[in-house]
Length: 114
Length: 109
Image 1 (tube, rainbow over the protein chains, first blue to last red):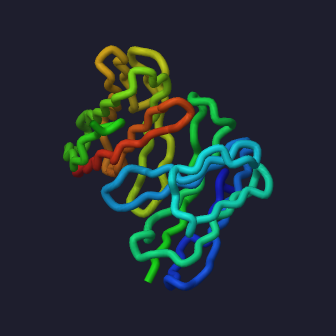
Image 2: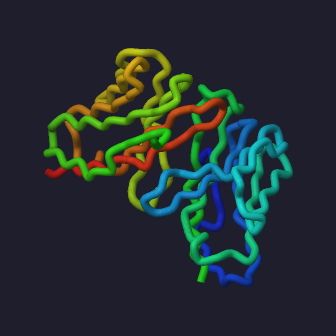
């Protein structure tokens, strides 16, 4: 069993749909993250949760709504997305938010908005 | 200036050669440096981390850090075709980890 699991692995949705990405970590970590990876761009940090509290939101549009019900689970709720939101969405976790802690990534969810 | 800069490549090396991947960063206060490997269509996986100036070796991989010059590099000895991937450099800025765009490495048999 991998440390950070994401579902679904692939998602195609229309611009008027509502869908959710799910992430679960089995590492006992206290910090969880959502990153966006688009072609030829660096990984973009979207949201950070520490002990279930959102501690960072990097100017992400409101059509992306995160939820962290406990320290092991993280969701990204999607609604009225745009085609330019098509990307690989990566969930990650780390022991805590200390700068020296390694971030471990899930396999990612490939999102296509049509 | 980008916070973390990497040459996008591709860097092409023959099998058995040493691959040298470089990364520069802008924040002098950065203390933690990471190298991730990302195969096409996959998520990044940690290769190495380094916190102190100098070299850190792990098998065929050596990370080198020079804080005065603000660069970190990754050497891969005896490169194998299976090393072909994109290598991401990541540097902390405060509590945030900032990634470069990655260098694509191609190792030819």
